[in-house]
Image (cartoon, rainbow, N blue to C red; front, side, top):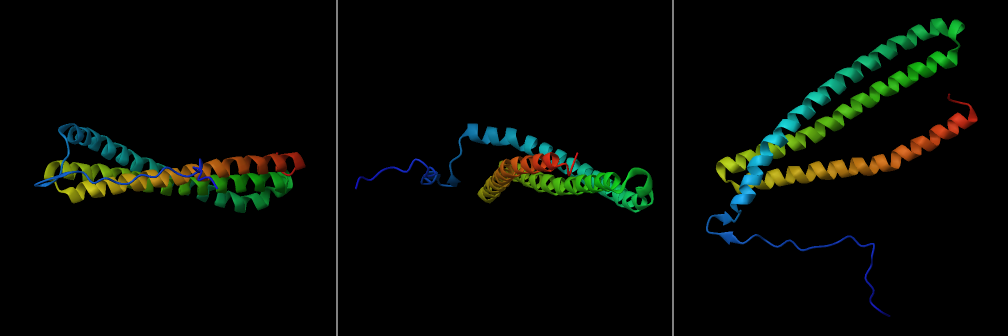
Length: 175
């Protein structure tokens, strides 16, 4: 049997350690300048992420509370608007509120990884402590891993929701 290469196998590589000088791993001046240039942007975008998460959380709480209070008033309006219409609107509003709160949590997690990465890079450029650089790269890794998982979930979830919505509309349950 012929030994064939699997075209679907993920690429593999072996980590090659950086040659060490007397004081530790060698980073070129260009590498350090790139790190110094990246750190303020990571911290700035992390802070903006925290602010965005706070706005999303605030909005989600207001919308959810607003539609919960609307739900109790909806029982009184059933006779004039019809129960299905007003309750569908209330359910939609609650769903949007909960999605805003979940988005705030996701935004906070991503902002935290980004900010911590920038802060650790800054610490490394000030102290040359290799542990700070390791922490920065670890947070950078977690950021992209989390972002990748979210992307995969979106690729799977959005088409499924579109199909379900299409079926519900075709059956006349929604819309």
